[in-house]
Figure (cartoon, rainbow, N blue to C red):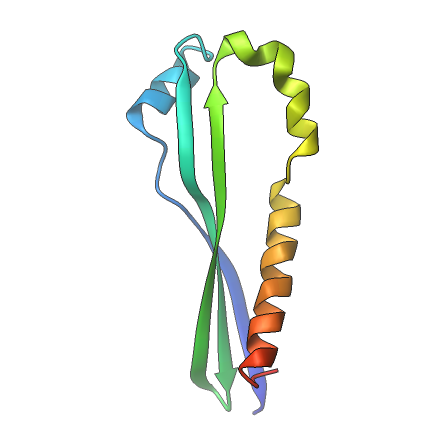
Length: 102
C-alpha cells in the first residue's frame, strides 16, 4: 500500500524513409530529422490504483549529411539522452508535487 511509481520509456516513430536511405548510403544522401525519439512515461499508483499518468517527450532535430562532418564537434554542446531523461524526471517530480501526489 502507499504510493508506487512505474517509470519506463518507449520509442518514438521510426525514421522516415529518406533518413533510412541516408543511413544506408553512409550519409551521402542528406536527411533532415525532426520529432520524438523517446517518450518517458510515469504512472503514479496510490494504494494499487492508477491515480495519474505523466508523459514527457525527448525530441531531436538534426541534419545528417557527410558534407557536415567537419562540424560534428557542435554535437558536444547539445543535450544528450541522459540529460534529457534527467530533465524529464525532475519535471515529473515537480508536476507530481504540484498535484499533491508526492
